[in-house]
Amino acid sequence: MSIFILGEHEDGQLKSGTLSCVTAAQQLGEDIHLVLIGSGVSALSEQSKSLPHVKKIHVLDHADYAQPIAELVAPALAAIAADAQFILAPASTFGKNILPRLAATFDIQPLSDVIAIHGPTEFTRPIYAGNALQRVKSEQKRQLMTIRPTAFAPVATSGGSAEIVAVTPPAAPARPAKFVNIEQVKSARPELTSARIVVSGGRALGSAENFKIIEALADKLGAAVGASRAAVDAGYVPNDYQVGQTGKIVAPDLYMAIGMSGAIQHLAGMSGSQVIVAINKDPDAPIFQVADYGLVADLFEAVPELMKTL
Image 1 (spheres, rainbow, N blue to C red):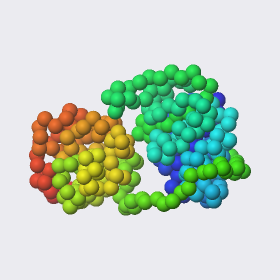
Image 2 (image 1 turned 180 degrees about the vertical axis):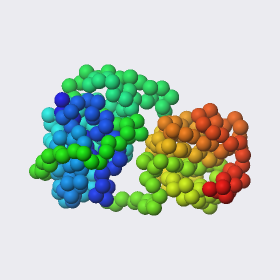
Image 3 (image 1 turned 90 degrees about the horizontal axis):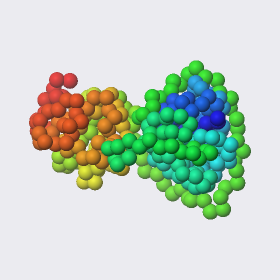
């Protein structure tokens, strides 16, 4: 059974979500293919050919694909993976943008946020903001699914010897979408979805100025910075920081929730963390129900004291 993975990449590097897809693909079969679509990705394909378990890397390198516009990428992927039994993509903004359009092209139902694979037709995915798990059996002849990266460990980046296959660009759609602009927050801190430590702040911080205490603690720990939706909506931080059902899904070794009540929508994005530490002055805050360690205290007193000891 052939398994095709749509590779997500940025600045000439594969994103960790793609490496997690390779791990997931191993549970489906051995004929694993990686698809790289973009402009200037030929160099990336040379780096990626050492990925273990990947048999072939299909490379579509063309200026028209400099930006991953779904209206262009989906038809190209449909042509490349026309005979695939499985097509996987990371459950990121990238994957969630392209795979539904690809599914519409094939006229089949995609499976989103897969966290476990029980066989070629049975999968587990979270529902109700992660409060329940749904085991799905799909009898479709082709399975399209987004893989939640936090549920599968990234594969190593060495040990393989994949064959590289150059792909001729297909004819572009008659009226493709037009890329206008991208606004992206650049930071020296680790990427939120792949960081080993995440320090998050909530609405209790009160202002963007006060949120700097979270950033200072994160810098001290070498951590990524996260936030609740309430903090993002209040304008304390950019929406790139948002963790939760409508934000990013994280599963670090250590997650620090500071000034967060622990709403269901937020828990859906971080409940898979190995160790959860919560600081909140409300002893009845729901966050303490999932925390491994909890401190009932005023964050403006507790965090400076914590930083003194680091």
